[in-house]
Amino acid sequence: MKFVALGSNLPVAHVSLIENLRAAVAALAAQKFNIIARALLYTSAPVPASDQPDFINTVVQVAFDGTPEEALARCMAIETAMGRVRQQRNEARIIDIDIIAWDDMVQAGSPELPHPRLHERAFVVWPLCDIAPDWMHPLLCRTVQDLKHALLPSDIRLSAEQW
Image 1 (spheres, helix red, strand yellow):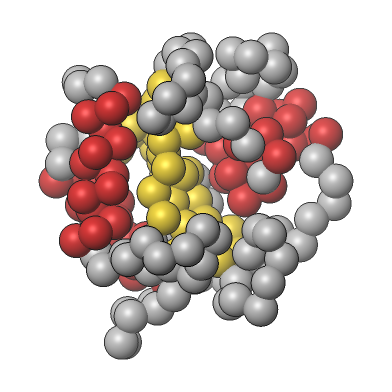
Image 2 (cartoon, rainbow, N blue to C red):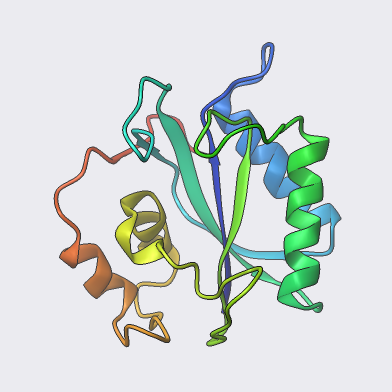
């Protein structure tokens, strides 16, 4: 199974955060990612904590015929096309698209697989649990359901608005 996480905390003009996520998922589909499943949408505080607005986050399961490197290049191109400008780490952003896992692949480099902090982030684990609770982390040998239960209580909450 291949998973992509998406997040947004910077609306553009009259475009809401959820519309940013919808546009990103549509762009993924246009870039030959077959969207198999979409998790629910969650609201969470920025990590690390800051005075930025809250994020809306989700995870999608995809099928993609290319390599993880090709997928990452397409994800970054979508971010750029949507107006993301990378100036500093952990800044507010229109869209953030991360490859979380690529089947059972373990690799260093870019992208690092599975994502090195996925198990620490409720904003990834909770939506991932919606669509693949039995997926097994290839390094930790724990299911997503187990990872969710291991997280400390968080300020993550189901978004009032959904897809």
